[in-house]
Image (cartoon, rainbow, N blue to C red):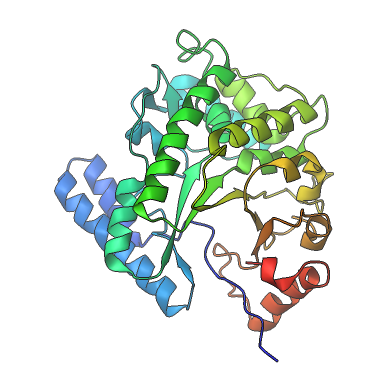
Length: 342
């Protein structure tokens, strides 16, 4: 009998070497040039790729080593965004984050002008392609995430009266980048959507802690539990509509506090609407405590969808042993064809 195997990859990001963190700091202080920083970045990507290859991963990422954060980097890549320090947006921002136990990046990418088409990750892919022959995955922030993270009532309203206006423009920019990446030969494009995952903590008329923070800092307003799901779904579906020739997935994660009333509840709370998102694969992190049982989400997964099952937490200093990984996968194999588990 042929042994069943699973396609393996990382969600996208990879721990940065200390020397790269120090290089970023030296660059920001003007101690090294952009060319020197680029050499450090190239080396970090090469190291990440080699580690992934040695670990036997089937699909490689560059570890997002070039990105200052998984969201803020759009402020450096797409015209119309500007990086602003969080306390310049709201002097009480850091205290607000501490109050709700919800950490955001201190440098915020904020829409200050109409955003325009630009390369987001094609350059990153081309370098990664030059250092590996394995299949490559590229990660991109989704429109719903960008809407919540980058619209600010003070800085954005003049050009984008409503956050949804920004989301629609970004969706068009993202769509063009997806097409460029597909044409360049990318194997998998992952749309990052942690804001949708965080919605699990929300109630119909009460936002989760991350949205409470963004409301207080940026002035965006919560639309209600179901309306938020509908908006996230429709933005992604409009972005990927009619694009074929490349596998597209959506990544969600969540890190609930132990005192959360939704601790232990998983992504199934977003169903059935989340199943209507037109992606091939749901890349879901289940290694974090309190994230729920993946079998509950998987049992109702439409027949044309795959589950990218997160079973290892790279931020955990305790490396998972093989038995732990096997146990996490076995929960899902009972309800989902192994050929649909990645």
